[in-house]
Each structure stands twice: as structure tokens, then as C-alpha cells.
Length: 186
Image (tube, rainbow, N blue to C red; front, top):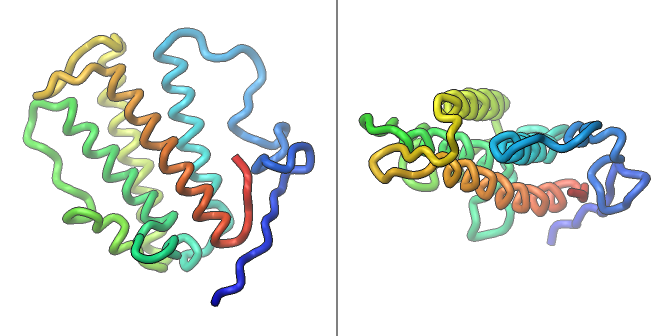
């Protein structure tokens, strides 16, 4: 049986936090965003940042380490999966021919995530590219009630779905990170 890492955090103020509030890049001074669109974008940005924070400081082997059989989930797999999701969300709002999958058939984003620095670098670069492309596509539709694509999905619904997807996977990332090196926190 593999020895489990001791639980730890960098936070000194609140033991259940990832970092102290003053060091957390997700904390900002001043009032919360004004308006529904700005609020949704802020939540999405914070979950995206949380995922990156959960991956920081790990080597390729740690990022590719699977959770527990039979799952093939890993932090690297999550990064690849979310890049795939960002691409797919653009398909939801387009009337054009769907963009092809980035990584192949179902679950290839997880199944083929291997501990190679080149793959890690490519995964983060691809995620950033796909996020930017989806953000740009949605920026053309600032009215959250606008319905797009073949299924006529509202921009609001897609933004909320994106937040939900990142939030759910940040929960997975919490558990994966704790299993890898014991680090805990929001």
C-alpha cells in the first residue's frame, strides 16, 4: 500500500484555505463586479484560476497521476478535458460544421494524458487558446438572452454551464491534489 502524504496548506490565517487571503490572486479589493455579465465572467475567471493554482508546483508525473482505479482522472486530464469542453461550447453556439475533437474519441483527454513535459506544456497552451476563442465568440453577444446555434442556447445558459463545469472539476482537482502531495484548501 502506498503511503499517503500528510495534509498541509500554505495558509496561516485559516487552515482550510489554499493561501492566506492577502496572497490569493482571486481576492480583489473593492466592490464586486457590477451587473450579471460581469459577475458571471468573474466567477468563471476565478474557477479557471483555481484550476491552475491546483496544478502549480507539480511535475509531469504528478499532474498525470490517476486518482484511483478504475478512474483515469488526473489533473492533466482535467486540463485537457476543459480545453475540449471549451471547444465544444463553441460548437453549441455555432451554426457551422462542428469543430473536430482535440484529443480524439470519448475520454481520450483523460486516457491519453501521460507524464511528459511536452504534453503538459501543450495542454496548458491549448486550454488557454480554447478559453480565449470561446470568450471571443461569446463577446460578440453581450445580451445574455441571445439564443445561438442549432439548439438556440441562451448566452446566459452557456455561461452558467461553463461556471458549473469548472466548479465541478475544481472539486475534483481539490481531491486529486490532496492525494498527490497532501496540499489542501479551497
